[in-house]
Length: 233
View 1 (cartoon, helix red, strand yellow):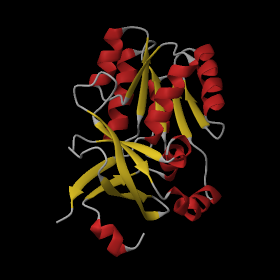
View 2: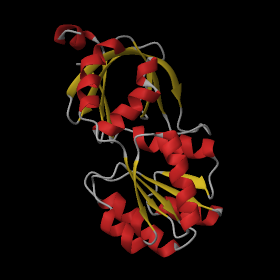
View 3: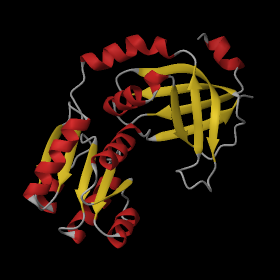
View 4: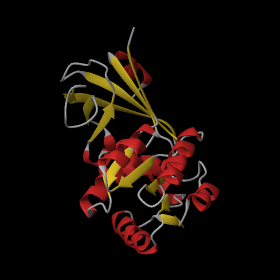
């Protein structure tokens, strides 16, 4: 797409991904199939063309054209408000994808759980979902804190074993720059609510079913760090 064509489109959405890993997960799960969902409360009509500017570490800005295929309002029980965008020129991402894949280091996961058997079971499920996952395991909050850096792609935190320590890790992850996406697993609604208040990006039961873990893991990994929408002058 030329810069001139880009400027003719009435709406632009800037989507910034936290890491190349985040973008590659988003690509494999949705972009490669011709669509993407972006969280925004911006009121863009269905059927409206828009430009999608993707900012990906290691790949620079990438420009696509799409159409708003569907919308979800803020009052929907199905998830956050946003736009479902149908993309028209995904094949042009090929060279950028090749470049990122050639230097791909795998998805770095921090797994905190005080129960060894639970950690082993969760790690096995994570590897089944994302075969390239490099999983750092921690048996307590102190060990997790030592391993938690902005290089981690996602942290999965078992809140049941040590709630205070787990909630501290969730807060620390949120304070990093860029913040580390987190998934809190807990057996009770009360603990899950505490985790949400402490900054967890995703919540799941403990133990989570395989399908539930897959949904929250992919969602946490592929979610852009920033979405900004604007109308052309």
